[in-house]
Length: 92
Image (cartoon, rainbow, N blue to C red):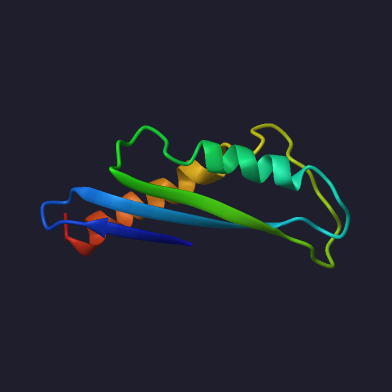
């Protein structure tokens, strides 16, 4: 989930990212993966007001673990989605 504050000229003034992670039914490295995602969340953008956080949920599914990127692709995808949404809202 994300929230973005932006001006009419397309400048992003603030962004809040909140991740939800399916940790599966056993204790694994989901907390470390989420921590990596939160730490990588600001990406290459210089957003003046920025917040990122998340929660790992225990579910009934089999536990899975990170394979290659260890939570680094997901924050970039969500941030780029937010930037694209701002452009869409401004019809730019």
